[in-house]
Length: 53
Image (cartoon, rainbow, N blue to C red; front, side):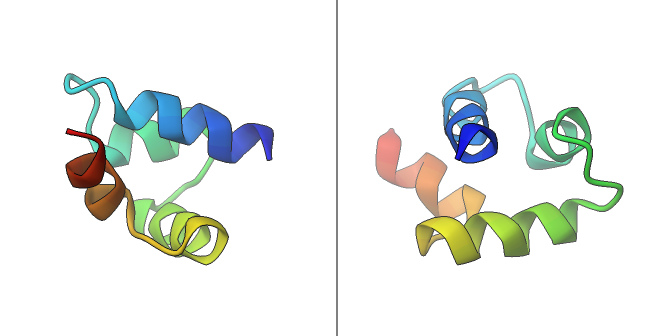
C-alpha cells in the first residue's frame, strides 16, 4: 500500500517519468512497475496521471 501511495504521489510530479518512478521504487524494468500499478489500481500510471490532471 505504501508503494502505491508513493507511486501515486510521484505520478503527480510532472518532472518524473514512469521509468524514473519505477527505479525509485526498486523495479528493474518499468514494465513490471506498470503491471504492478495496474493490478493494484485498475489503471496504468499514464492513465492515472491523465485522470489527475
